[in-house]
Length: 78
Image (cartoon, rainbow, N blue to C red; front, side, top):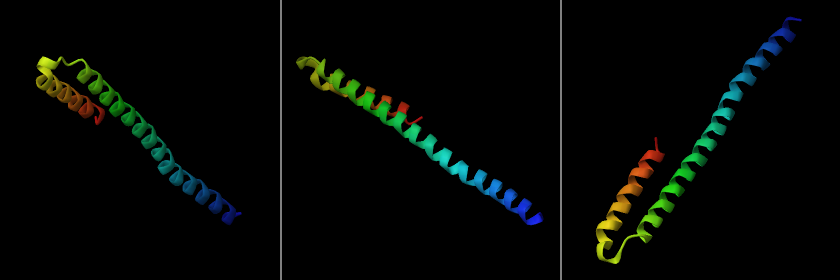
């Protein structure tokens, strides 16, 4: 009876210990997917911004788009 109780307690503790890393990995996958989506959105916005730049102000406009994209990417990392 005592060995059965020890086996049940051991199995319960082992199961709880093993469950934590698995759920943490799942959370990391969700976080990675969200960050990937955020970065993709930043890239899309940057390309859209660059397409609207007029030829006469091309360089400053593109620089502003790049700056906005960098700010967007930094926001994705938080």
